Length: 499
Image (cartoon, rainbow, N blue to C red; front, side, top):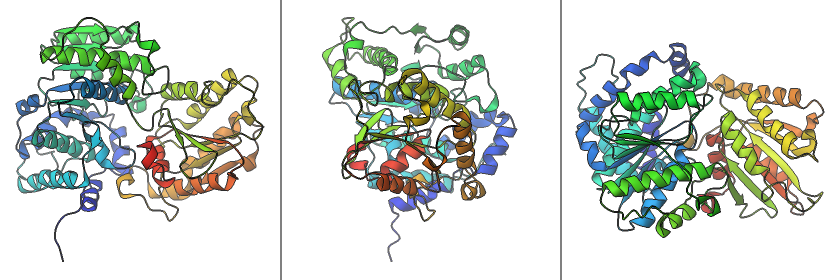
């Protein structure tokens, strides 16, 4: 019997590092006080796998944070650099993944192969197991899931000799595990808002303080326009941390006329930041002749950008007449952008009279820590404001509230396993019943028989297939959770066309 480790072995080992629901609740209850140990612990893990912080500077890092748009901005930067410097090896580290955890670590836009992921995974795992001496008493033997993935990304990018690394922050900035890089080449902050990380009751000023923790001495920083109270904090922190400059980016005149690879008006701002981050990086590397205009390679990169699960339209490859609209929006602000996109004339509200046979269906879920009623009210409020000839009670013919469990037998796809929700909550469909109650409260006239509470994503997809009779045009909006979107891509067989 072979003892060779497989990709599934790596995924199982990785999943063992997840925090369970009780642990996450304890962290929330602590007010996040454990954050102060995050960087010292991460530095210790880094040393245990054979690296010093200065080694990370060789990765030539573009460090990006924000509360919304940081993934899209990272994707734009990645594509611009690939098109401008096709001979370069561009590394991209982002989160979360949609279908396979390998998606988090990409080379020139392509996820690590299962073979490479497994190889680098067990090199990091085995080093941590072998080098078990710890300086800090509170440091656990093994890091948590995201910390391990960050260590794995650093190791893979060093082994693969990338020319540049686009590094997306996980959560926050100051205490994020990516923030052990002493000197990135350039840093960027996307739009800031209070709802994405407001589980601990942070103010916008506090959020701006945490995000600006990625600023570094002598390193230029860029930001999109922010609310005045947030911008004041960014300016103060740029001085405190001695960033060489802090520039608020403006939208290039030509940018609104370009058909960006990512849909939605909000992407113009993300693309503007990506342009400036890319331009500054290339100047620093003496690899760009800046003429003060948007070069053709930049435009090509912006047009070719792909970032699955964000305002993405996917015609079903098998079911005739069925189109999936996928957006992992999970905050009030991002849902605002999602609904602007879904209600736009070229998506859901056609300029011509909509045929009576067309049906719209909503599949929705959110984690228990988020405010489901508020998010659903945002959806219905947008429908009421923009779809004026429709009663919000009839705009979506059906609504489906399901868990993020992948399969109807109660199991998760290995890469999509989550321990963040208690078994009792999943088994009792607690969140889903709360969402259904909130929907009915918001829309008392909505027919109860058209609300479905289902235990898995597979059940939800099967429900859609029951409704589809191939003579009807069905538009399905899937939103509220990137994990939900990833599960739908997996179960509905959309990977080939969506990823």
